[in-house]
Amino acid sequence: KLRYVVDKSKRQRWPRHVIEVEAMFGLYRVMSFTAIILAAGKGTRMRSALAKPLHQVGGRAMLSWSIDAAMAAGAERIVTVLSPDSEDIQTWLDGAPFAIQHEQHGTGDAVAAARDSVGTGDGIAIIMFADTPLVTSQSLTALADCVASGASIAIAGFEPADPAGYGRLVPDKDGGITRIVEHKDATAEERRITLCNGGIMAVRTPALFDRLSRITNDNAKGEYYLTDIVGLAVADGQQVRHVVIAEDEIMGVNDRIDLARAEAALQSRLRHAAMESGVTMIAPETVFLAADAVIERDVIIDPHVVIGAGCHIGEGSMIRAFSHLEGAKLGACCVIGPYARLRPGTDAEEGVKIGNFVETKNTRLGAGAKANHLTYLGDAEVGSHANIGAGTITCNYDGYGKFQTLIGDSAFIGSNSALVAPVSIGARAIIGAGSTITSDVDEDSVALARAGMTEKAGAARAFRDRRDKDTGSKS
Ligand code: UD1
Ligand code: CA
Image 1: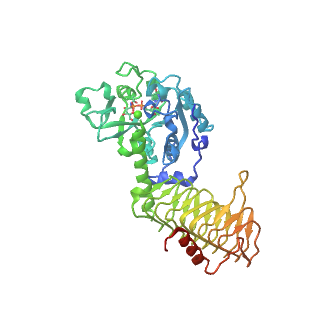
Image 2 (image 1 turned 90 degrees about the vertical axis):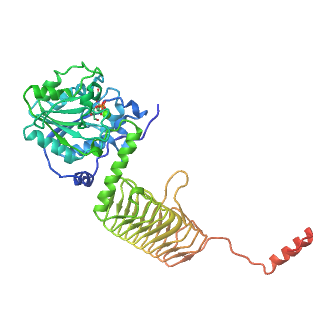
């Protein structure tokens, strides 16, 4: 069986600012409710050995997005409903509460499985789907508000470009909803309704569980539909309302094509948030951002740049075309790329320049240090204003362990030098081009480690004369 590395197989606890980015898309309001996230479906259309909720959007598992949206909206408790064979998700949840739905008999049956975890006290539950990762905390709050102000159920409604496949919200005369009819069960006339069920709903408890115990599976799919609680609530004389939510929030991921669509929608959100906060993007549609990227104002990002997880880019920096960054921290006014690769642990102070075909990993660079061309810096500390010549390599690995290279302030490393770690180059030292440095160099020294050069005057001409004679040709 294939094994996947999923978020290091544990749920990542995202730093506060990430949750705030989420909240930034809407009004941040804390409202007490329990979130029930349905994740027990088989997800067969993904055609994957990996559980659908662990597939990633924006570099994070879909389930992570649902959980964090619920947290940002102020969920008091979050219960994920899983199938019995969901060990991978259980491991990933890392101790967070879950309930098991023993057999997959539909969304109503799945919510009922959370009954013991949720409890039967008076409150509000928001039912979410693990395959709907882009819903915002603002929308969840709007649904919870609607129930807090008197509705028994508040449904996330939307008007999709193509309503086929979705449940339809059947209206009454006063703008309320009388019931939800699933596409498969709908009459031709009901299928003409364009207002659809986004799946997410806020519901009063304990009435929710009472109604779930009364629904049947007498329908086209032979399943217990969660959506049937709407008709029951109306029959009980309760108010059911809906809140209209944008399609790109409600978009469900059923297959890899949907997954790519969700990624595109999320990327567009992240780019907009970055541009709104003062970042220039020459061709935003070609820039890919991890959800936790922190990019300060007046950063300029050229086309075709990937900013992976864990990056912080300081004010006024420039990220030039085709650069790839992960886990990199940059101070103000750095210039990166084109074609630079910054790997985790790169930590550059202000004004650092990292140019084309330079790779950095686990390396600190002091203010104004430069590595402009064709270099590998791994497990290194580079002092401020040091200059790393083209083709310099820190030889940090001997096949067993990793070793450090220390380069002092204003040191000058000549082109094509190999610095064999562990090694230390003092401040202001100069390393002659082409050197292989295997022991420490003092500050202010010049070190040179290469074969001496010889020159034989006229030897080139003598060589050609001899070869011309041998072959009968003339140069
Ligand atoms: C559901 C709604 C439909 C709505 C659509 C929006 C019902 C009956 N229908 O349909 O009105 O328009 O979502 O996307 O609710 N799940 C379980 N256990 C189960 C079945 C499903 O946990 O036994 C979970 C799935 O993992 C998924 C979610 O519930 O996260 C939705 O299930 P899915 O089968 O995709 O529902 P739809 O047919 O899309
Ligand atoms: Ca679905």
